[in-house]
Structures are given as structure tokens and as C-alpha cells.
Image (cartoon, rainbow, N blue to C red; front, side):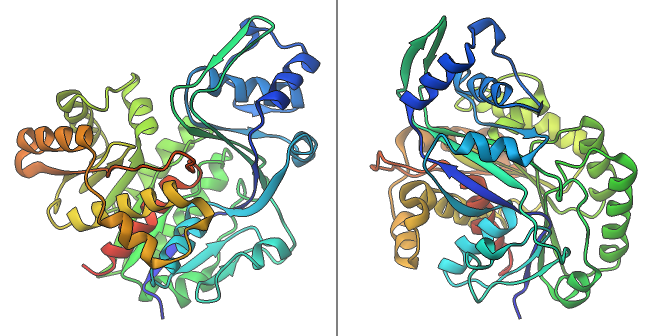
Length: 395
């Protein structure tokens, strides 16, 4: 039986093939002007969907927002060519781990015939819904060096990134399965918790968190790894941390979430700014260990950080292998090859300086040098989780 449990939500991803000319044509059709471009959190039409996407593009950011009806997503997706994949941190982490020989189990809330065929046979799962469900997410992966002007809008990207625009009807309810805890979690060495970011009904969220608390409060010899996400509700975000962090060993999040929590853009290559930011959040969240993963490095801060150094390296290696090969990452040899790549020069310099000033309170592992240019930005954080928790299960 696998000793890695991954919960709790998932979705059906439509990965759209980027086409600048189609984007420009849609801007013309909807007659969007620069002054209209702003962040959208809840979308109810195609025009606002495009505005929400342009906000992230214009600011060279990755991000997420939600759509009220899945039919809007189907209509918008029809403008592009796309393929269907299984989304969610748990499933993507499980698939990545399966490639390098680690078994895991999943708690799912969305299931349909398309998704059934995408889950490896060695990955066991329980779905809390008996009905056919979808929760479609549109995934836009945009490349760097896009440059175009239309109407009075100017877009110029300096790095690759991804935008997620989804419908979360099933995930916003997040039915939980007692069988999952009884059959898998109580026998696991690692439990990853993620996926409550689309819940906005605070009473229902409280009920779900109480359910989890009841099932994990007496577990021994299990590491609980909490992977953060882009929450639709600040109140829901705070409630998750209030209810669960007394049980959480590792709180993990990415560079965008680091900036969000600090209410400012963080210079990821300034070792003092990064350390000060992490120290601030460590004091705020009061968990044993904080893990931050970025394009340049991965950092563990707090307790047991030397113990987690192989986990950081595993996370970086898995995410970078995904970055290099995308869905063509299907052989363990690709992971081993990535693991043996040289550290990036800028990344190594930062890591050396950070480790000097953090002393015994933390550890930084640099990212490696990559030569590929046709790269993937979808699922990198999920792959990092897979690489980290697979090593964590061996500690």
C-alpha cells in the first residue's frame, strides 16, 4: 500500500494552445480598451474572461480566477485548439511521482470518463462524488517575448507563465470521504492537504475542516504537508490556517503567494529581502517549517531544515523535469538527467549568500541550468510537491 496520501480536490483541465492572433482578434471583437483591464475574481461572461486573462498578461504574472458557469469556458475554449488533462495539485503530483516509481493515493471530488483514463493504474483513488462531474479549468500557458499592440493595449512578456480560469462548482462544496481516511490516510507517512481555495461558504468550510481535524488529530508518525493556493476568499484562507496549522508540519507556497502575503513584490534574488519576508511569515503563521518554491530556488525555514534538504532538491528536480519535457515527461531517466544538471549561476550565487545569512535556521537549494526553450509552465508547483513529498516519505 502506498504511504503518500494526496488530498483533496481536482478538476478537468483544458490546456489551450497559445495563439497570439486569436487573442488579438478576440480583443477586437469585444472592443476591449486598456483602461478596462483589471483583475477579475468572479467572471460571468466571455468578455470579462478575456479582460481577466489580459490583466495577468499585461503584468507578466501567473494567476487564477473563477467563472460562474462552465458553459462560458466551453464557448471560450472553442476559439482555440486544446487538449484535456487532469488538474489539481494531488493528481498532477501523483502522476509525476508515478513516473519515478513512487506510489500514492488520491482523494478526488471530480470524475468523468476522460479523467479515469488519465490516472495511472498504480495510483489508487477514492472519489467522494458518484455523479459524473467536470469542474472545467482553462489553462493558458503563455510564452516569453510576446509583443503586440491593439486598440490602446500593449502586451510585452518577459517570461513564461500560466493563467488558470476555472469553474469550481464541485470543488466549492468539497465533499469528503470517510473511507479515504480509514483506508489510506491512517496508514500513511505523508498527507498533503490542498484544494480548499475555491470554497467561499464559511459555514460549509468550517464543517469540512472540522471533519479533517477529527480524522487527523490522533494520527502519529505522519508528516502533514499543506500546499497553499490562490484563495477566492481571505476569510476562507485565514480559517484554513486557523483550523489546520496546529497539525501542519510543513507549509509550502510559491513566489507569487510570498509576494501576496507580504503585500509587495519580492526581489527573489535579494537574499536579505527574501529572508526578511520569510521570517515575517514564519512569525505570522507559526508552523514548524515554511517551504517557498520559486523559479530560482527552493527554501525551507524553521525546524528540521537540514532534514528537508533532499526534499527541496527532489522538488526542484521534479518541477524542472516537468518544465523541460511537459507531458512528455514519462521516464525516470529524464528525472535522473535533470538531477545531474549543473546549478544555474545566478541561482547558485543567491543560494550561497542566503545560506550564509540564514545560518542554521534554514536552507536554500538552487535551481539548475536548463537549455530547452520550448518549455512548460503548467503544473510546475504540483510537480514540485510530488518531488518533495516523495522524498519526505522516506524520512
